[in-house]
Amino acid sequence: MTRLTLTPLHPLIGAEVAGLDLHKPVDAETNAELSAALSEHLALVVRDQHFTPPEYLVAASVFGPVMRQHYSQYNMPDHPDIGVIRHRDGQEPASMWHTDHTNRERPPKATMLHGLKVARGGDTSIASMRAAYAALPEAERQYLATLRTRNGIDDHRTDVRSEDREKYDVPVYHPMVRTHPEHGSNAVYFHITKAHCIEGMTPEDSKTYMTDLLVRMIRPEITYQHEWRKGDLLIFDNRATMHRAHGDYDRSQDRELWRLIVEGDRPRLDLTAA
Image (cartoon, rainbow, N blue to C red; front, side):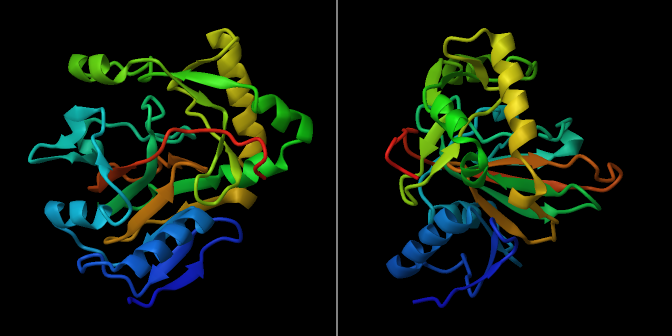
C-alpha cells in the first residue's frame, strides 16, 4: 500500500497529497483512501506530476471513468477526452463561479487540471458548497430543497459546434441541493449559465436569484485559491464545490492546463441528510 500524507491547505477545503505517484498502479486500499480524501477535503493537490496524454488518462482512471467534454474544438486531437485550456486558442477564462457539465444526466464526479505551463497569476479558486449550504438560514435551505434547474449548454456561447449542441444540449433537470453519495452531506448545486431556468421561474428571475445566492454564499472563509506551479495536478469534487478561473495572468506568457472530467452519478437529494 502507498503511504499517503494529507496536509490541509485551508481550514474547510483543500489538501495537498504527498507520497502518491500516479504513474504507478494504485492498489485498492490507496484508491479508497483517495476517494475518501476527495469526499472530505473536496480538492486535492498533487505536486510534480508530469504526464504524457496516455499517462494522464490512466492516472484519471483512479478516480473513475473519463467523460468526453462538450466543447470539442478544444479537445486534444489525438486524445479527445483531454480538454486543453490555452488562451492562445482564443479561450476566455471561466471566471464565473460554476460546477462542471451540469447539462449531463450524470454530471462529473470530479474535474482534474494538470498544469503544463503556468504564468504569473491565473489562479483557480474552489469553494465548498457544502459549507455554503450549511451557512444558509434554515428557511432558505428548505426552500432550495424544493427547486430544480433545467440545464443545457450555455446560451451565451457562440463557439459551440453544431454537433456538440445537438448531442449535449438536451434539457436535463437537477436539484439545486444535492446529497453527496459518499460523504452523505448536502451542498448547493447549480451552474448559473447552464441552468437556463429554475423550474417555475422565468429565466430572468432565475438568473437574479442564482446571482444573489452566489454573492451571499461564496466568501473567503469557504474558498481555497490555488496558485499554480508547473507539474501540479488539481482534483476537485464537482458534487459539492464550485470553482472559477482568475483571468489576471500575463497574456504574453504561455499558460496551458489539461482538463479531464470523471463520470459521476445522477444528482439526487436526500432530505434526511445533513
